[in-house]
Length: 181
Image 1 (spheres, helix red, strand yellow):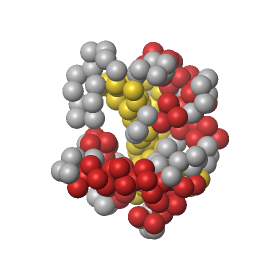
Image 2 (spheres, one colour; image 1 turned 45 degrees about the vertical axis):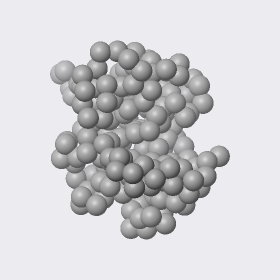
Image 3 (cartoon, helix red, strand yellow; image 1 turned 60 degrees about the vertical axis):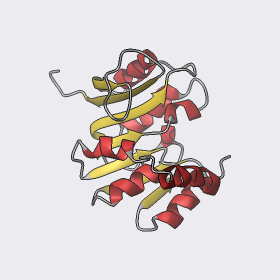
Image 4 (tube, one colour; image 1 turned 90 degrees about the vertical axis):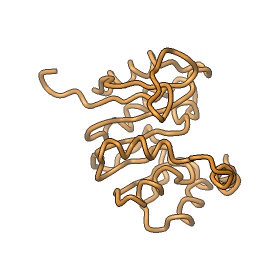
């Protein structure tokens, strides 16, 4: 169980020190989405920044404390408490984003179900950034995306689009497979 207020305070301190804490939102905005599903939204840092730019955002997280903080910070954004593997919002979003190591916070062995759960909501692209030093690889992630009908279109080493050459972090962009592809 997390403490949403403490978690958010860490990012507030980083922002106050001059650090850009919105790299993920900037990355997502480059796709020009009208709608975004912030999957594993935590306290809403990414989703709230996207909403400030006129994007319709739905944030989903399994942790009630994180969502309580998100609701306090942005009561006009839709926040949903759900396990992402079981998520069924009945609609697709231009971009689904999993920022903040989301696949690493699920129980080991459940990443395929996690990806399948969020993939149901992908209209155009799924964007995910996570560390590669905790036992879940980009090859496994790509396989889970393929199982869910998504294919890799871009991969970077950072949210500012540095070239991926291996290393301990990846930002991956997958799109829905189209008939005939």
